[in-house]
Image 1 (cartoon, rainbow, N blue to C red):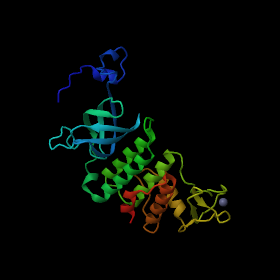
Image 2 (cartoon, rainbow, N blue to C red):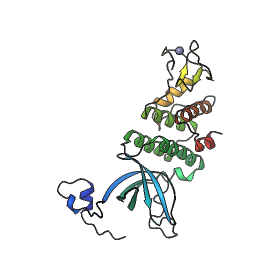
Image 3 (cartoon, rainbow, N blue to C red):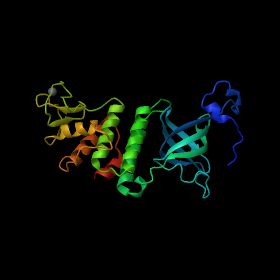
Length: 266
Ligand SMILES: [Zn+2]
């Protein structure tokens, strides 16, 4: 693929005094970015819109022209979960991908269906909470760590639960687990309230709460605070319930069902 614009790297990396080298057509130009591919969908006859999470610019909707042709120059580089480096041509509405190179493909996670499903949940939820044109460093790092953990062979419900709880923390609505979500009292709560945003004590107990197995809030709390690659030992008695409660909490907050999580959990 020919690349006629010498010096563009300097421009996009912000070297002062080189800005005039930027090729512009109708006031638009080229810029570089990087991010993790969340998903893509067909666009026009042969193109796809590729949705990417960039640490610096949040959720990007970009166009990959000709990607649905048999001999696409993009190959498999824009598959979901791939961390890519991009050169984008800025458009009025959508930017067009002119160059793409792989930073990390996470090949091992793709060889295992359970891990692909877990990665699918991660990108689905990130896609649901990420905003456009807003830096999302924490969310990006969390997704990158989640995919890395899966690629290294960590798997199971606890990894997804831990990821989701960390995500709620990153976007500022983590559920109360160590104290009552309603009155703030320290307790060992046995019920969870979606509307109050966490576990609730016996004296508050608003209507419509979910009953919890003893030890569940401590279990979830440990998952929320541990490293994704060093999770505490899994307890099969609590693992499924922890994911179920976390899922319902997220769905309540996002006001939508999480389809990939349904496949994973049930
Ligand atoms: Zn209370």
